[in-house]
Image 1 (tube, rainbow, N blue to C red):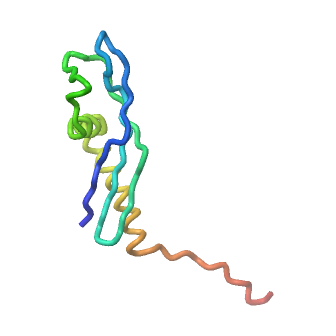
Image 2 (image 1 turned 180 degrees about the vertical axis):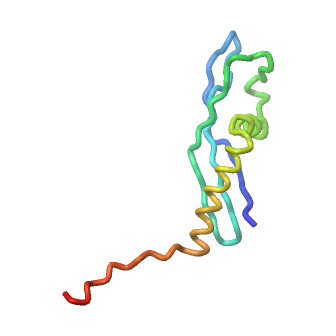
Image 3 (image 1 turned 180 degrees about the horizontal axis):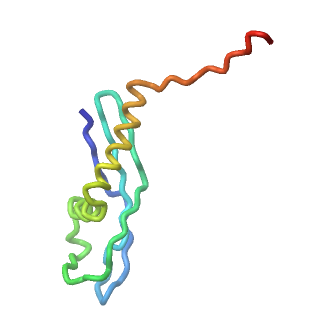
Length: 109
């Protein structure tokens, strides 16, 4: 069974409606580990709406869990499933490497 670890690696902020350090973009990585096999998608970008700043959380009060919640909300269930499926596909290819055809010389050459 693959375990997925989501981490935030960078945050980009702007001043929005007088709120300084309003997070507008997060960069994140997702790593999947299944026993001895590891795969990842790195430097993913999530952009957040600035339309509603009523729920503003001061920058110093933010946690990685809050930002990951925003990222997953932005992605939606299908987006999360898609990222984790891509990583699972990489792991599956490590476990059972695809067989590539061999360029065999022509028998009459």
